[in-house]
Picture 1 (cartoon, rainbow, N blue to C red):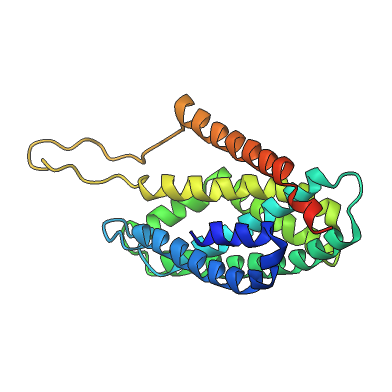
Picture 2 (spheres, rainbow, N blue to C red):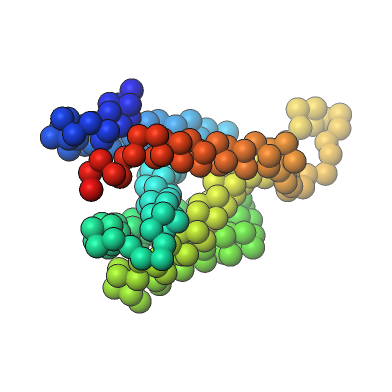
Length: 243
């Protein structure tokens, strides 16, 4: 509901003066909603890998970072080959915010892994070691999702807007691997069977790969979002109203 109100304020010049207040409320509600969603996993005591206080915080950070990446991609596609001065100034400020969020994510990820491994706690330490030994962790999460965007921001002093558009494309892929690995690793640790006295299969790490149906649902969802954005932008002329 709060997003509908925010969209209404963005679309109407008469209510632009209320946009700041509505945006602050939307930010608070968004953080609360994402932390509540993350708590569903963080309170899962039966799975020590994800149980704890680190996951809700990192979930919020990843959501904010994904939003920054999408803003860069949207304006990169709409503003090629040149960015308008006001858009470039906005993306310059967004690069600084993105850099801070990425550094915060690195901080929390470092301590999540370290505290999980320390003490060699059963299941928790084994699952974390299993997760960080996966190629998708280093190539997807670390390289595409964190390292390359941070290097682009630092090397260009947050002013390399065009480079950030390409880095954001890799960043979105990295965000996908963050969520994919999170779900996979939660259920990767082999659990004991109920009938241990009669029969117990050899425990092995659970391997998973998305089916064609799941892949089609994800790609179709992305397509629906792009079509809806294009329709709203063309029908309501959101940018033209404020230029």
